[in-house]
Length: 270
Figure 1 (cartoon, one colour):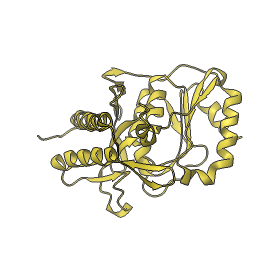
Figure 2 (cartoon, one colour):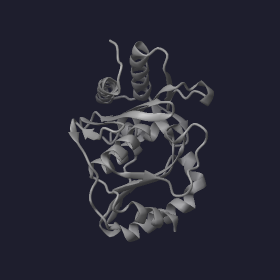
Figure 3 (cartoon, helix red, strand yellow):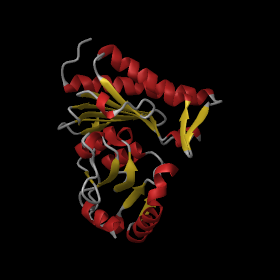
């Protein structure tokens, strides 16, 4: 099989995400899940590792020269090639470990540090979110768009609080920001999977999402999906990026329907 264009890469990525997602679901249904703790509150399960192995093998078989940036296989920056796959084998591992069906396989393809393809697949809801740069965003093949809400008081906004290790440096600001969102919006949600949050903004189930620090595998695919759907995405202040570039660096994210994006950003800055 020879793949020569972005459309074919997108189709291939969807197929691999579906295979990995079904494997994750099968492991979940089997029961007796093996769970290890990488650090306080940061889990890895046998399903994470099995999913990642499947994804990387499928990509290596087709693109042996490509490189990988993944939650469980995180190479140093100097080993990242121009053709890069950014993988979260299960985004929302804690949800998965508790049989909460808000989680998904996330795969992005980047060329020269820019994400061109993004796929997020939730095998428990059988929902495939996908996008290729400049071609719109889709849910199970149907084009999606964010809501047209234009007042923060009518908005449902999700927040992420990051892992306990990352959270320590943001405890006070997160508490303040969540309190402000609760006061100024219709309501707040905490779903526990950034990729799912972003996809829900993309398809209009949520009006906005904020998390203070995320790694590229958390959001690379879903951020492209949100942008291609028409959502606004950005930062609170000047982007705190390193020389890897925006799409493959760890940083905060705000994503929202265009009608409330700036109002939400200003609220978070208070």
